[in-house]
Length: 57
Image (tube, rainbow, N blue to C red; front, side, top):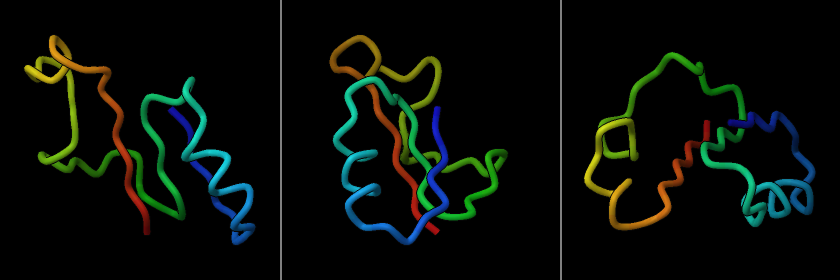
């Protein structure tokens, strides 16, 4: 998991492209906020694909 609080667009793109980050928050997204449309533990996506979540404030 990573949170990127930056306005540097090239750094944001690098974070989005990073293959070792499974959950990425860009901006001041509270880490306890749940979004049921994002992959989470127990989701069928975990069995079919590599799950990644992305949120942006």
